[in-house]
Length: 78
Image (cartoon, rainbow, N blue to C red):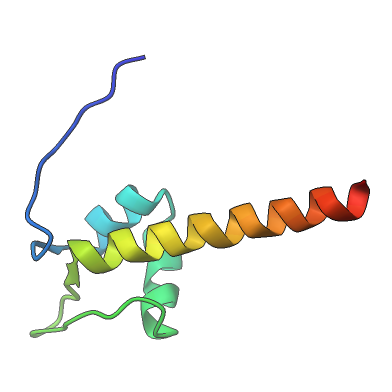
């Protein structure tokens, strides 16, 4: 399986569509995450912009929480 690697500055701003694609979620789901305050964003006008670094941090935290929950489930099952 080939993977594409894109290099971008962590301060780069993403659109909601770009951020949603990076996280593997729908844009409406991302908007809810933003409105719930889980990822900081800027809204200079009508369109939200999200820092790449903040999206990556959210992704890593979400992955870590999922891993911890799975570990707890395995412990309970044993």
